[in-house]
Image (cartoon, rainbow, N blue to C red; front, side, top):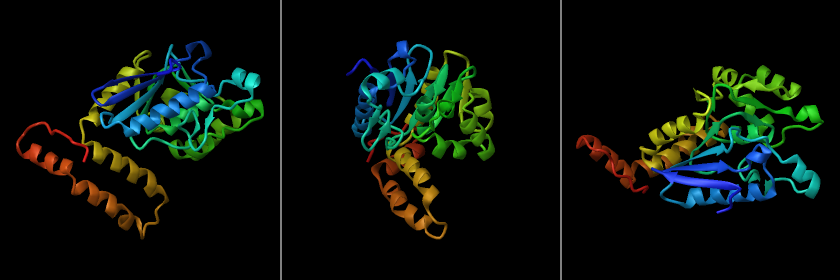
Amino acid sequence: MSELVKTELNDGVLLITINRPEARNAINYETAHAMADIFVRMDEDDDVVLGILTGAGGTFSAGMDLKAFAATGQRPLVEGRGLGGLCEKQPRKPLIAAVEGYALAGGCELALACDMIVAANNANFGLPETKRGLIPSSGGMLRLPYRIPYHVAMEVILTGDMFSAERAYQFGMVNRLVEPGKAVEGALELGRAIAQNGPMAVQAAKEIVKLSRDWRQDEMFELQRPRVTKVFTSADAKEGATAFAEKRKPVWQGK
């Protein structure tokens, strides 16, 4: 495993740590590909129910490594997956961002590509690309208007100014606010609550929630039906009902 990205698996929760604190966890080409490999393996590993993405050294990520880009000309993109191996193709399994310090530019876009965000109450988000004559092309313009009100998203994108985790929480972009230094702990608490549930149900629920945004109202139940049927006819569904009746903790098989 590359030391650029560290992983730790506990109780079905895979902690993924971008490990470039000397560069504020900015993403270079090698880090992006290491992250992509981890997201692929996360989906393939039956022992993993969900992941948590964070950064080492008290900050989440400053986005693309501009120094590396200037030196090599390589952008930290992975074909078919985008920035950090995440922004254009999310894992099938849920992913929580644990944000300390700053999530700026591509770092903010990585957080937006996650399904949930737990942030320290003194953390800051931002898409400063317009200040440099650029635009946030790894999902910032596409996702932020769905996470916070349209007019606020436009202000953030067009001014390039930072906004606080507390403000993001007020708008519903951040799920949980925690004390500084406690973002991973808070994300693990949330992750363990999810990991107790049926893994097939968790993945199917994520898939339906994501895809249904593009479904027409007159077809959404028809499109949902085969995915729901797969869950309701699974061994895990039977186990969940049996465990409830027997007043015990279910033993999931993921099938």
